Each structure stands twice: as C-alpha cells, then as structure tokens.
Image (cartoon, rainbow, N blue to C red; front, side, top):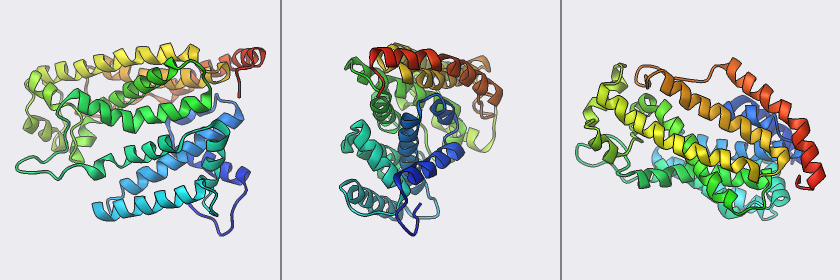
Length: 316
C-alpha cells in the first residue's frame, strides 16, 4: 500500500492497525492485550508479513513473476529501512518499530523468506503432483521459517532478557504451524501441497492417492489416517509446552497477549482432537464467542501485569 505523500509515523501505524484488524484473525485478539506502543509494532510486523504473503500467493501471476514482484518489493524495503525515502506506510511504521525494538534486518528478511518458501520448491517430477516434505526435520525447517521467525520477532517486541526465550519462542511457532497444518489438510491438498511428512504417511500406511481423493471428495478419515493425524497432534502438544514455559520469561506487560495467542491456538488443536480429526470433511475453527472469552480472561490480567512491569522496570 502506498500514499501520494509520505505519511507520518502515527498515520503509518494507523494503516497497519487497520490491516491487522481486517486480516489477522487469531493474532488480532492477542494484539488487543498489548500496551499501545507494542501493539503498534506488532501490527507493523504483521502488515509487512501480510503483504509479502499476498505477493507470494498471487495466483494470477506465474511463479517467476511472483518472485520478481517479491524481490522488487524487498529491495524497496531494504532501501526504506536504510533511510531512503518512501511513501509506503507499512515500511515507515516497520522502520520505526525495527529501531525502537532492535529487530534485526536478518529476522525480517527471514520473515519474507518464509512467505516465499513455496516459490522456491523444486519442480515436481514424474508422477508426483504435490509439494511434499520427506521427513519431520524437513517440515520443522518449513515451520521455523513461516512461524518460528514470527515468534522470534514478536518476543523482541514483547521484551525478554533470558536467552532461553528464543528456543522456546521457536518451538511455540512450530506448535502453531503444526496446528494450522492439521486444520488445513484438505485445503492444502487442493493447492497441491502435503505438509504431513512422507515418512509419517509411510509409517501409518497412508498412500498419497488416498489423501489426494480428499481434495475432490470430502470424507471422514480412515482409522489409519486418524492415527496419523493424532501423531501430528501429539507433536504439536509437545511444542505447546514450550509456549507455557515461555510466558514467565517475557516482560510482564506482554504476558496477557502471549497467553491469549497460545490459548486460542491450543484451543484450535483441542477442537480438532475433540472432533476426532474430521479435517478431511470440514474446516474446524475456534468459535468467535470462545475467542472473545479467552480475550476477556487475558484482559483481566492486564492491570496486574502492567503494574508488575512498572514495579520491576521490565516494560519497554
């Protein structure tokens, strides 16, 4: 998004807040519980990531055209972040947030790399009609780039001093992304992508053609497919433990927001489990009333958490 004249920093943050309000869904509920200056910074990061994602997913363009658009946009960001003139409100807001919270340029570049991962996959060959990941280690790298890097940026805005927070934030991002993968199995199949590791498909005797049929005709999972989905859910549960361990390590005034985010995503995983992994036939989600209930519980923590931050001098 660009304006005819360079907007002020305040106007730029307002644009980013509006983008986040419209597009961020689960994330926006957590943003509300942050102090204003941290919420603005998170919205700027989200707006930046959202635009990169939109460029990568623009199916009206060829892969090469999308790569070219993304590279040109990233070059414009590098120029703006180095002090060059820009009228892009997202760049203006993000440059301010980057300086205020000491977010490295490398992390922001990794955010873009994560949104563009599917543009750089090797061409499909032979009978393989899907982008796949051979092992969980391969999938973990994908989760790191598309989700963990977001967490590493966020904790710089939240505030922390204990270096253990970085690994815990990385693993919390993996928990979130594994939850998304479980929710979106059928949608991803329709887009030619299988994020369930091939080694796991083989372990549970789930052939790719059986999964492929789900894209065209929704159905309930077979018993072995439910076992596969349950195994991935158990992996996600393992990484959610890192999210709960991360909470006390970040600045008290940011804990309610992180708690809200973890609670909403973990609730999504629990809904998938409670509905016996019926992700082939419908898209499972957390009802809006439940998200609002979680947010209300998070907001009740805000006065205490901000008082504690002021008392300990850990807010920033």
